[in-house]
Length: 43
Image 1 (cartoon, helix red, strand yellow):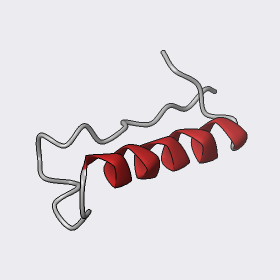
Image 2: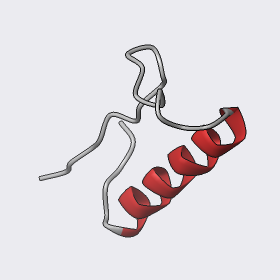
Image 3: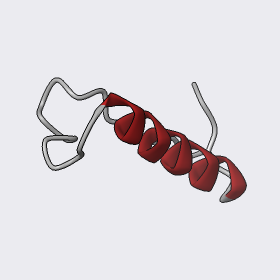
């Protein structure tokens, strides 16, 4: 069985507590790398 994740895009204010766009991008990259390292796949 393969699993995937939904990466936040900001439309639902997932990054509202993030100081700026660069920090939001860095956070998103950390999420994507953690998912990749854990074996999740993009469909």
